Image 1 (tube, rainbow, N blue to C red):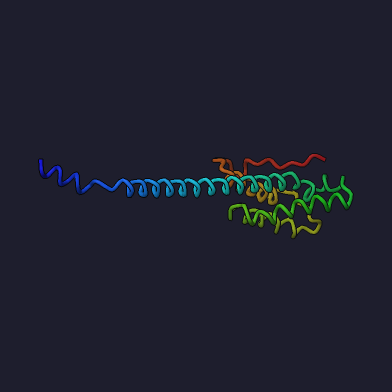
Image 2 (image 1 turned 180 degrees about the vertical axis):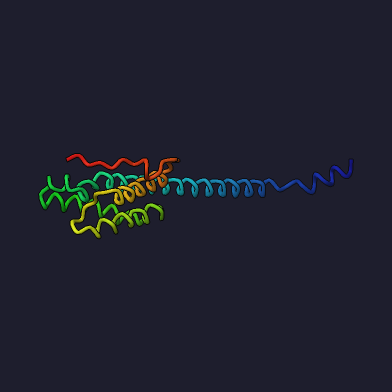
Length: 156
């Protein structure tokens, strides 16, 4: 019995100290929760920005790269589409994965080598398919598709 009382005396804590310890634990818990909440908010914002840039690139691509679309535009309209397209590409360096950037660079290199700055044929289609597959992976879509599954066509 005496041993139990000695043990209880050893683990009993001053009530004031108990309040301080409980307060410190609560503050630490709040700080950890706030940190992870902020981190999640930043990750959501990055995903939103990335998604917006991907949509711009995909929507503007025909107006920048395909003759059937380019021919329908005035020089001013063509410039507006090109500015949106390459502006979104520039922003990818902030948001996209390395795989997306490299695939897109390969596509742009091929596009820039073309004397008319347009893409037609199987090689450009494969490079474009790699870009789209990289984007799918980057936004979290698990896929078994390959470049060969991509259908490249232009309606003129």
